[in-house]
Length: 476
Image: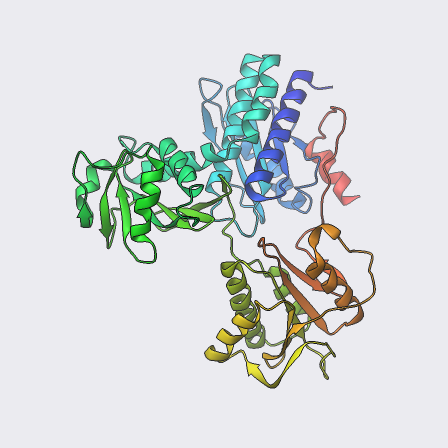
């Protein structure tokens, strides 16, 4: 059996990664490929089967090319020689060679709605550093600490990625401190003004470039609100709500109100009510909501719907029109924060549904009719849409049917009614948008998902298999 201390180290870091990334990105798995020395062997720690399906590529990289054996680690446990990105589809990875571990490569899922993979890569990088550090100190007291650190690493991961982007352009000699900025953004996002959540843009400019901003108004030097004065800044944010102007800060104080092009590589916080986004240059780094940072772009994920349409053998232009119309209706419901259901009917004749029927169906390819349809979606009940001709035949429709096995009381009446209705009507696909943002695509009485649900496995510490054995098990 391998070094028991090392196995405990892997177990704690793996658990911390899964828990932390799940909070940041939704249900997330993690896996590790490692070799303790140049002679190998290469081993795989993948208790949640994250790497299944990638066996051929991993076998080629690790057993044939042996790229990992050519590198040597740094002088201290934290220093590393970074490995190349393996570019495995659907996965984010980071690895390197360290003084006390010849090679380690951590993997996690690349969720479809990620703003950027950068913060997640920084998260995996820190996991590598912690494991090498723990192996260097071999302190049993530090093991659980490493796992706990990785569970709550979101702000640090966002900060590290922002710093990396800025260092490539501005250089390390910067006076803009990212940690206080990120804390201030979260504090402002949680502060209401007259019962309203913050809206508007707040931009943080490198102090050396602060004079390059085109100001509409500036505040007196001794009257500039400090960033710690959250309530005052929240009030000032109202002045840039609903326009293209921005509150401008040097990271310490609010300088004034600017407009037009801002200095490159400034950090922008876009407040959009109960949520917002962090941007640097043209890259959206992450979103923030509920007092924390998240990887989600908060855009509708309609991948499962597109896959269902492809299975119907529709023409590509028809699929494009359907996806565009559904995307518009879903985005409107999300922005207005109300739930809705769309019954996409491809049958002939259409299914019989009780509700408010229209004498002349609305043509969803017309802008005015689409605007009316988005308004009708607010009425309790589902929209009944002829999917083949993109016409709305009824609204406020009631979906009924007999109970099915897949019902989930935690999902509410709209979701479960859609399960029942689609179980009895094979000619429909129902898109359910919940008021708290989740989107479900339902067909034939089941929810279509990109991947099966996985359940955490709890097991005793054991030797991770070698890569050769792991590949053989997959083939057999």
